[in-house]
Length: 295
Ligand SMILES: Nc1nc(=O)c2c([nH]1)NC[C@@H]1CN(c3ccc(C(=O)N[C@@H](CCC(=O)O)C(=O)O)cc3)C=[N+]21
Image 1 (cartoon, rainbow, N blue to C red):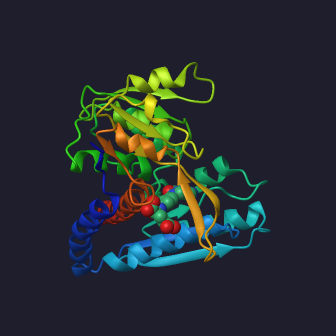
Image 2: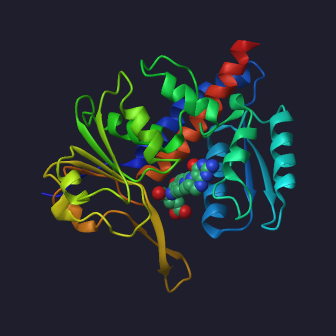
Image 3: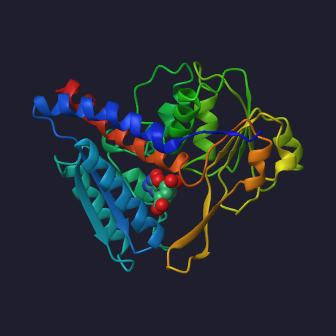
């Protein structure tokens, strides 16, 4: 038996279809959602992610506002670009693509984003609302990858409530906020958040009904760590070379042999990545809807 596929492409496509309807309804009222991106430098991975975000936007009827700065941009130039995105009425939501070049204080830049336009859900106000919203009642943008993971599991009817989730990696964009989201009321998982100082990681992972790996170490999670039937989500991605035709060769955090043991597996590519992008669009639409309600 091999694992069933947690199909991020098909699920993201269903979500995009739902969003297109909400966007059309906003446009009827002359409200045009617009996604801004701020990219500093020319990292090939970042360029490809940002390009993908604007392609998705065009597909569902969201306008694109793209700001690219050279890798040599100073922190004050980045500050000015963020201030301009905050002030631009065409931008209903935007992201500052991470990582920023060395020497630019990422946390300080995230704090400059208008929380009402924070499409990544990474502004401290919105991360704080995620903590405050233990009852699941708050209306604020959620970090895109954690939200995408929960949505991917829900839409494949993988049970979460009461289940034990082991997260590998405590990073800002995935592991840490995912633990907060999964333990909210209404989601109700029991979470173990592991990291590089965890003692006996394989033993922790063996107890998991759901495993999420977000570390960026190729094929790190081995099949003998997986409880038979567990759901396994492969988030990390690492460039491991180039193909003969010059395309990037990518590897996820999960050893492919895990498919022989797991009950569910998210492919990488084609799993969590497309869901992250769909949740970004959802955050932009929700920000536009919220702004419309506020008048
Ligand atoms: N402020 C900020 N927000 C982010 O959300 C953010 C970021 N910075 N920095 C980098 C990471 C990475 N990330 C990805 C999103 C989608 C795919 C994705 O859709 N991948 C496709 C493959 C795409 C391809 O082939 O190039 C897939 O998994 O199928 C991948 C990676 C968002 N990130």
